[in-house]
Image 1 (cartoon, helix red, strand yellow):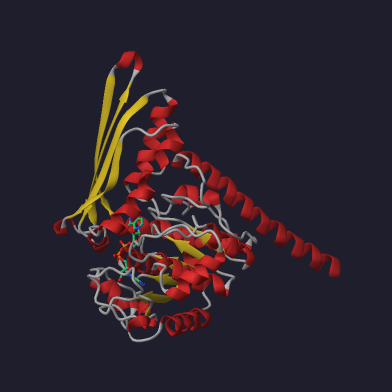
Image 2 (spheres, rainbow, N blue to C red; image 1 turned 180 degrees about the horizontal axis):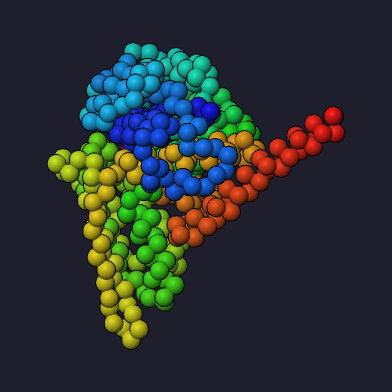
Length: 390
Ligand SMILES: NC(=O)c1ccc[n+]([C@@H]2O[C@H](COP(=O)([O-])OP(=O)(O)OC[C@H]3O[C@@H](n4cnc5c(N)ncnc54)[C@H](O)[C@@H]3O)[C@@H](O)[C@H]2O)c1
């Protein structure tokens, strides 16, 4: 079984915990999981959520069963077995969250030690960061990470990733925009600790569609004049993005692909634009692209969508957990560009050029065949050893 620890028991992590249990019981179809039908040795049913961490006083101390119900979903009784434990609020947790955190009344060093003890007890194979968006800078050397952790100047995702990598033998999947897989220090540390970091910022809604549309236009020799893409939603993630620093962090990961795909950067406006409570989790996405066609004629495209934000991410989480586990088993450490390029908005490692998702998907399948082959070779080897011994 793949032991999963969730950081940030928000809507996405809750839909994930709820959905994984339903998949195991055959209560739903695996729609929205890109590699659901690809067998690389880690079945959909092998995922076990064994721990959860949050800092929201409303959630800490409750079982996953209770938290999932808070989101209006009907949970399976097994979710009573996992209780949400307190994490680190640091300076990066949004001010609208009333916290119950390890560092509410303790020193940072003590709080961090407690978190590390908890990770040691839980022994996760994969830690998934689905916490609220935090702004960060890339970190180049591990000493800077250690220094920032000690001084309390790093945002929570970078501190959680530090705690995970100090343990080693684990995969850290960063679904949010903080620089983890795009920080050379974390990737290098993961390599030396037989660990893996995947990220950063999962691409689920308009971003992957936009990059594929741009690829389509580029292949046909059309000159893109402008790209406008915005999202308005009514969930807690959108509420947090009304804080300017967090919004900039999202804008950075959403805009990065234009130059890589087109070879130039047309004028663009790509960012979450607002919080509108009645929309709930089903965000409104609008996209406008205009381009020059043969003879200077200008065409344009308008796309409107309503997307259930958190379920979209939860489906990808199922794959990311399986891929992270399979990669570690195959002895792949550091990070995996083939995974990041398909699933992430700003794929690590730092400086990696974006690819259209339709092309990244083919590369991902090749990668998956590769790690599955390693596994098969190992099994054949074991069998031949037994035969020789016999
Ligand atoms: N489609 C999507 O929903 C989508 C797509 C890509 C990326 N993301 C990213 O995934 C993350 C989660 O999205 P969501 O919709 O579940 O958001 P959410 O607001 O519902 O959940 C975030 C959770 O993180 C918790 N949290 C905040 N600070 C924390 C800390 N310091 N330690 C532990 N927990 C903390 C919050 O209390 C909350 O429960 C966000 O960062 C978002 O940017 C979401």
